[in-house]
Length: 211
Picture 1: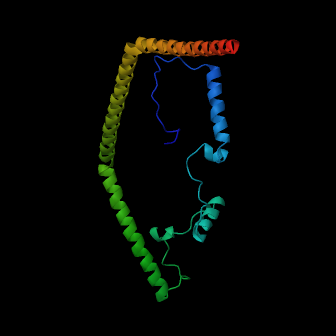
Picture 2: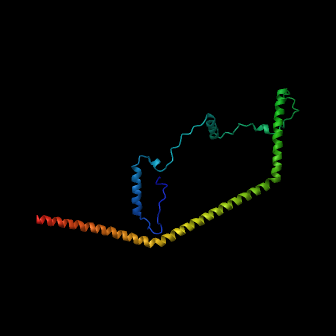
Picture 3: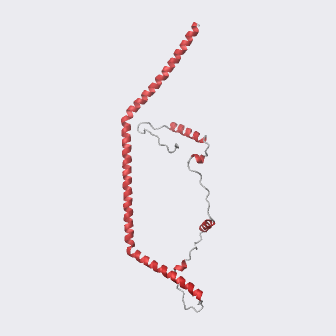
């Protein structure tokens, strides 16, 4: 498991805060470990793989160029959805069959779209306000539910932290006593080793004198 995601047990209510010198020493060790790694500095700060070079089709590239040039999109002919207000009494207008068929097809398309649009606007005018209010009511209910869950989670966190502090306060004195006992034990071991070394030196000196 990476050290960046490992969760270590700690005793924040018992252990003292590290000093600035301790923090500096720890940071120096971390920097030395990262500098000795085979990873680059960018790779050492993230565990994500490098981004893949994007590849777009010619159509997408052309669309990017259009957006960059701020040109309007002309892929859809919007005039077919508009009512034809041309005056049929214009004597100069062509009256051939293909032209009339094209205009008739455009008129059918515009009529269908405008009729559907009129129906939708009528429905929106009749029921749109109520639907909007009902949608807001559902959103408010969902928001209230999320806020209740958030408040419950915060209470659980507070209770966990309270229990954690209570447990550490209860065993704090015992842990400090054990720590002092361990330090005294280590000191006595060192004193015993020094005394044994001194005794060994005296024995060697006495043998040399007798020899």
